Length: 397
View: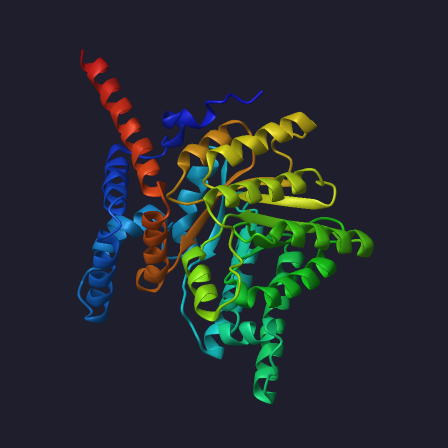
């Protein structure tokens, strides 16, 4: 039986953090607990970079150190190995966003293939990750999703996107590295879902290589999962899913209201939690056909999954089940699950500091906007700080 207090062990959770690391994390999450500060700091960060002021060292020592592993794959390796010593694996994610040219997309595809090859040579890195709009313009994904007629040039562009997508998936298959395909906004997602299904049909015959991401704040994802499972059973291929709650709720609701269509998002957080747990349970009930990456910072869902695996007699380190969190967040889940010999993994972003600033800003905005997110992290960090201070006092006495 898994201890109900498994996630309360802050000593294990922050075992890799020095006292100075802990202080930095406390400082960052204190700032994020005041939502009004994030837009102000974002404005000054972007302005400083635009004016080419020497602020990169400040970013590196603070938010970059908190949420990124380094500027290159090689720079990430010491951290990857350190986390692995505590049974926490890594997914390297080149987190450069906002590129728009064909040359950028070609470079992104080659970069993903290089990361897949790099991961295949390191037992600590069982997964790679790819973002659909990193391989082609958002507007093309959107038009295909909406079944709009493409111009001749757009048709060629869409063919190039599909070619990049397949080359990345082929590399994952060739190098035997599992590949997580990110989910994005609902109005481009159908096109990505269709390509993911085609790639799963091609590469997930014997085992799962390609994983699609399900954003469970979308109320239709359980139905989608069941329908795809039915098709996969008929056509004899396996499914891989990464399940998350979702990252674009405000944007989704605003767009639905503006354009006058029903929002695809669950009515509230409680409904999202119910939907997430329902999708997770369905997948765990069908492990012969569906392999699952549980991407959550939620203790209840994580504990529920561990309980279900125990009830089914499934080994916690079964390769079909992974528990993933973002680097710099929810260490109390990652390291405590890793200590129980479960498959724990951190998504480890990297890239040149200036190029990953959009990712870092998004991370800060999400932490400050999600109710209780920054506050929960801060409370755990302070608890560990107090524990260490108490230990120090006892040693002195």
